[in-house]
Length: 286
Image (cartoon, rainbow, N blue to C red; front, side, top):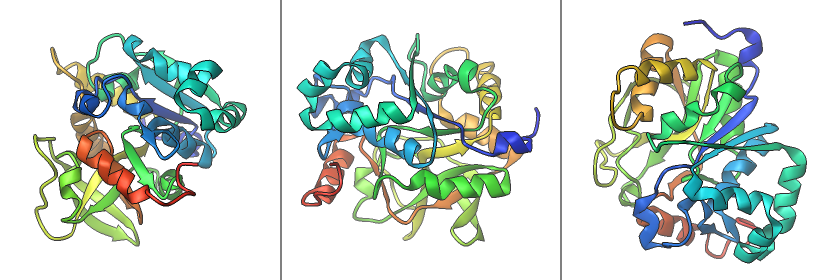
């Protein structure tokens, strides 16, 4: 396993957005649209992920979808589809398309988020990459990657966003992202352990707890680690926890505490909580 060299660590150069999953929990909100295209303000959720990449100076954006989610590609590439779904977003999408290269890849089998990320290996495999799960939406948006980026480039370690969970919002977050951390410097922590995802919502272990979010920056070794985990998984999904845990064990990983809120909009409660937060804030979502 090779270490990052200085050129690889000057990044990220790519943004990978895994958006192929079934999203079954959100079908009660809208059975006709994938969760990535559900409205947050006046535009779809996934557009915030793309704009996060642009705000951090990333010009190569890869969105991994499935054949069943072809409408996501159509939203970005087909004006008629876009105007039917979101009449107010045409100008902003055209601006996005003028500033970056949007590539759509297809996950052949729905085998988990890390398997989806591995689809980008042939394109991004020699470069540092940001990875954003589009059901993790940072508010105020954009801004998360600009906080993580200098940490990644300074300390030459993979870095993941950490967000404080308070009691009044824990029920809006799925029980994923449990992590043990120790303080390192300022808003930076050292990750000690990633905990496996469990059912139900996020349950606080103590009054002030930070969770690891689906917003992070990684060296190109992430693809090698995914393949290492793939070799141990003979059936079922290749999820992010074992991949992150192996990187942590062999390379170490940092966490970066964000000052805002990372909303978990991949479940109905979190989606509604996010909409309540932005209600009346005309500048967010325009």
